[in-house]
Amino acid sequence: MDEFSKQIADALPAVKRFAVSLTKSPEDADELTQTVLEKALRKRHQWQPGSALKSWLFRIAQTTWIDTKRGEQVREAYAQNVQNLSAVRSVDGSASAENSILLSELERAILLLSEEHRSVIALVCIEGLSYRDAADVMECPVGTLTSRLTRARAALHEIMFQPNAGKVRRNG
Image (cartoon, rainbow, N blue to C red; front, side, top):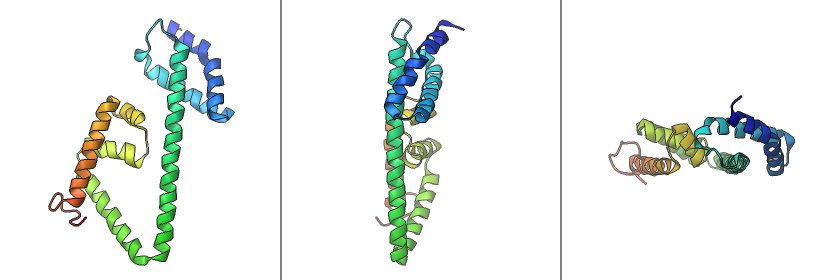
């Protein structure tokens, strides 16, 4: 076992305690601790030897937990919007038809985006990943991901609402 792995093993009880304090649940703390260990091993090159490994692991735990909570909030908001949309559909059939058409047009517009733009839209806007997690998936810095997302949203808007820009939706 190398020195890095030994230090992680030594820090594990402290990371677990910190995870319990964040999550307030032993089961969630186990999951968070596992995620922290996976991220630490994957990002081992980012740790500066000689610096406090525990602090680095705690920072990973805290940002992971914050990202998890944000993701839950996004998913809850999405579920609430879907629930609200379902209520509208049951009251107003024309609204339901219009929403179905708009959703189909949006799906077609997304397919017209470049692969890079489709990926960033899918990760952040559809799957609800944090910018940091999406950047990890795309193996790029968060700033690069943010720029790509801005360009992807602009391209999607262009396709959806500009005349003859993809011929998906002409009014708007």
